[in-house]
Length: 97
Image 1 (tube, one colour):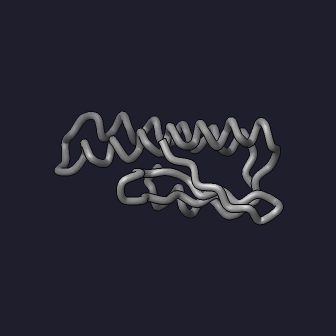
Image 2 (tube, one colour):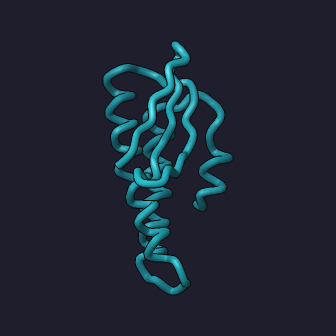
Image 3 (cartoon, rainbow, N blue to C red):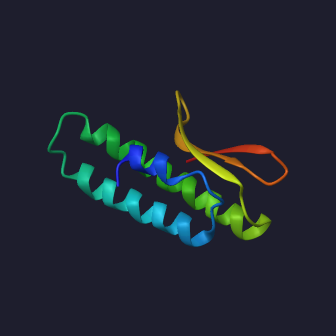
């Protein structure tokens, strides 16, 4: 599952099962990039690892607070990869590794 397909995956309400699928996809990306067969794979692996750590935080938040309305992957300079989550009160929270 590529980052682009992860972006297309979102749009509907996310539940724990869907977030677990995203985590599995990130695990596959990490394994792929760990082989370091292409230029930049180590950097891509770090981004995927950051996104995985952040998705675990989103999953914990979901377990505590309930369903989320929307989730979008983000990459911020200095903070790395993460997720921007919108809850049903339209409150936006960013999760990073």
